[in-house]
Length: 248
Image 1: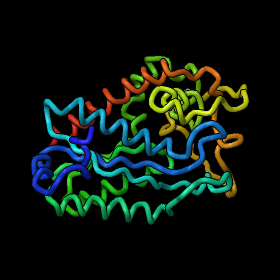
Image 2 (image 1 turned 90 degrees about the vertical axis):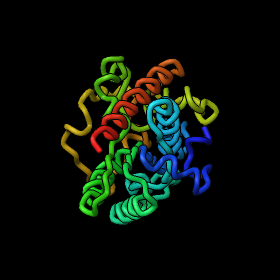
Image 3 (image 1 turned 120 degrees about the horizontal axis):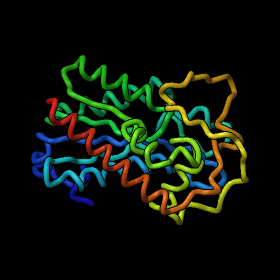
């Protein structure tokens, strides 16, 4: 996968990607319940991006920038283990990354987000970059894959993406089982089947994430489900990258 990593290229090799798409994975460092590592979001963003680059390499050049491992995670601070940026800091950092890449000659920037707390920020950054003459796109991996994941039954087992529930636990069992430590206590909450982008968003002072830092029951999580979800996500994100590429 190194041939798709920005940091593995020298400056001459980078020239070969400037007419293609550069994916900027945007993750987070925060607790994921009592059973998953704090790097879930960053690992997922980078791994999806690298597989998309690999799958698209015969058709168009795609390069993956270094993953931003910090996001807006203030609502996780009370649990410990979070390294968070303020929303205004996150937006400024992402914009600076975008402007730096544009100044280096990259013409198509695709921000791939894997943390719900970052979703508004990456979209605002794309709007700001366009105002500066930079072509950019932004998406959370689950939003572009929502219909396909729904059709595959992902919502039958819990929230998508949820937080440290069945969905993310399944993905981690497939990608990095060594970072999954058992299952959290069982929960009988009714899963939400609504697209998060279409629900009323409420955040109250002092409010955390779910109960004990996870949103839904992971008892039925499995590596098999995670493999299916991952294949769907990579396929759908790749389609979104191609769609973006063709518009410029």
